[in-house]
Amino acid sequence: MLQLSVFLLCAICASAMDLKTFREELLADEDFMAARDYCLEQLGMKVDDLKLAATGDEVPENLLCFAKCLQEKQGYVDAEGTIDLDNMKALPVFSHIPDDKKDDVMACLENMGKIETCADIQKERECFHNNLN
Image 1 (cartoon, one colour):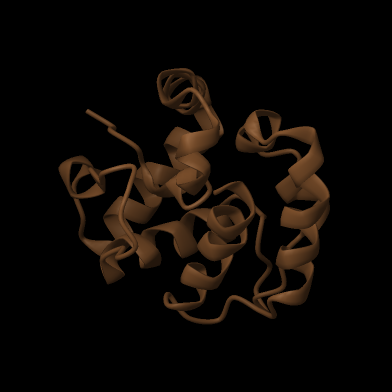
Image 2 (cartoon, rainbow, N blue to C red; image 1 turned 90 degrees about the vertical axis):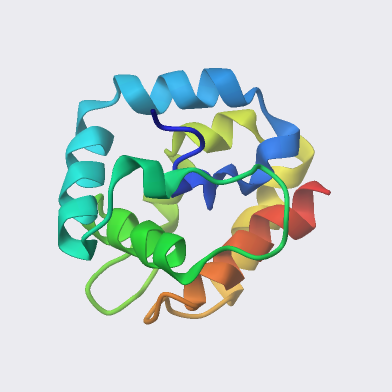
């Protein structure tokens, strides 16, 4: 089913967390599942399209677009593309980030600019990846 859904793009910190636990948290979150289903429909995707290896630098554009849709739908990014840092801190993935890295991740997110295109999600992904590896 859902391998490492793109909230993966927060799950980019895959190496720093228990992926099974993260996956279970997502699947149990009704708001996430509703947003997931909405974004799948909007983008003409299927659940199987969300499968992604936990490693690798290249993320297909459809997954970047899915992540952008999810974040907009769940209020992590507003209509102008501004990241809501307080909401980001509330993401389940943040509980899996080592305490000594949380400030670095948040500073990177704060300084990365707006998320206006699917490709902008890659910058967000790098905030996690660069501060956790």
